[in-house]
Image (cartoon, rainbow, N blue to C red):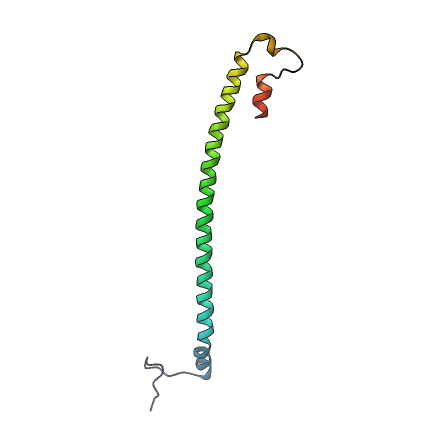
Amino acid sequence: MQESGSGTGTQPSSPHAELESSSQGPLLEQIGMLLASVDSLHAALRNERAHSCALEEELAAMRVTVNTLKSQLAAALEDRPERGRQGSGSLGSETVMGAL
């Protein structure tokens, strides 16, 4: 006469199988905790990606502003009177533009 196992029609093959089934509770709990950690990490990664995209957009806007200001500075240096370009305190547009 065979004993029925856990309702599947199989019987425990050894005390090892009984030990495995009794240790599944803590293992399942650990698996649940690991899955929760993975979910938290995924959420943090999504937040970091969104933040990174926002920073990239802000950087692109700042680059446009810097390029506009460089153009305005170059135009202003070109338009100033000739005597203002000479002297020890004068910087050429190449020097100023290179510094930016």
